[in-house]
Amino acid sequence: MNLQISNGFYHFRVLLVMITFNQIKPGSFTDNNCADRLIGVENRYIIPDSSFTATSQYYNTHYPYHARLNSDLRGWAAKTNSDPNDYLQIDFGLPYVICAVATQGSSAGDEWVTQYKISLSMDNIKWKPYQENGALKFFAGNTDRRTIKKHFLSQPLTRCIRFIPTTYQSWKTMRVGVYGYLKACENSPLGMESGAIQYGNITASSDVHLVKNARLHYTSGSSWCASTSDSDPYLQIDLGTSHLICAVATQGNSIADQWVKTYQIDTWNSATWTTYQENNIDRVMYH
Image (tube, rainbow, N blue to C red):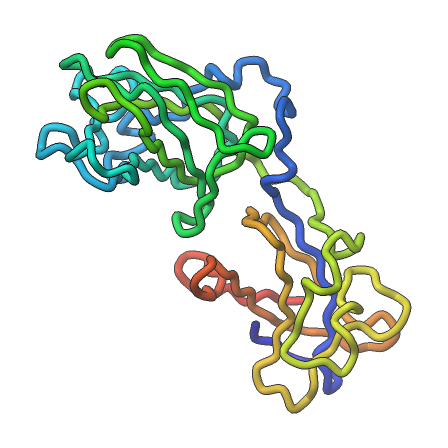
């Protein structure tokens, strides 16, 4: 985070506003049609062919993008049946609330997946197996190649999904559909101000005043500020799990005319830090 100072110190209090996995609870979406709303996996003009990938494919006849529900392109098929780690992956491009998934077998032969599991990711790097009631969920697959088999989900928020076949009839071949809706941003604070984010999750490159004072509307003393000798100051908040960040807010010192004038935001994707950009340019925030 790059900061410009006022009156000699880096003073900062922050608020994060975002959507989290934990805010989407089973049954929280009141529209009864949610599980009937295909998000576009079946339509190449909504979810393009390039959004489909897989660990392998059966020659040039069963590409990943052949896996669209009701497609007459045979479906996706793994190259062999011997790899238990085979998966079909779809990147939606944006976070969706997923209400249901559906599968079919091959459109050209008696091949289908009889059981599978799914995994979810917000960044295509860190993956989380889908669970219900704290246990890994195995989905019953198809019993023939044409019938659509649908399962309701507990409305997780995700950008990417993997279908992982575990048992099959003749060959690991499938066509899939995903039901849900694009999640709009909500003004829902994460917990910097309230204290829901614990003190141990807040760190900094240096501190003249403690990082616990960096909470928005903190008035019991001076806000967090970095040392004047700190050439690359930052305030870091560990959110614990993946989140969709909608907005941030800052204040200066509550007891003196001291504040940060400009700053940038970096995010961590489990591997590297990346500076937040807009239109491929590093965004500078102004107070």
